[in-house]
Image (cartoon, rainbow, N blue to C red; front, side, top):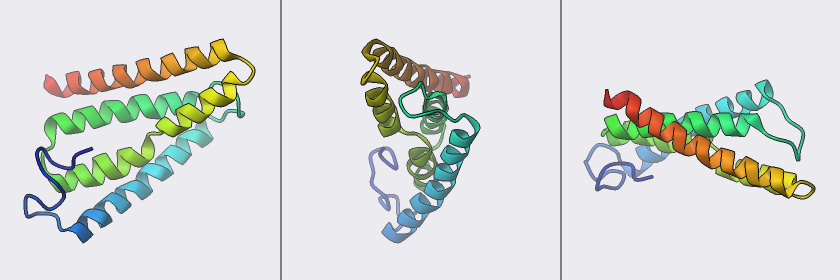
Length: 133
């Protein structure tokens, strides 16, 4: 994700490389802990449908699209977008879940991947629509 429209961290003079790293790290700690918490609240066995992954990805997509629609400050984008929401969402988790499900049930794995893509797109569109009002 680009930290700022048309720019790189520090391009607007507001975020040095070190402060950008610290913002991403701080947001990442919070996002990772939140992701872990959702996993504890919605546990699943390996190779089964992982509702926690679908929930965090849909919610993360909604929040990220809302953020990118409204927030232009590079520091806020680094902290909330790259850091917090980057650590909160998990496309790799979706992939691992699908591979494990697909070992025994390829049709269920395909349905899981489709549900993941639909939830990501739906979440993103919803987040953008909410802030566009």
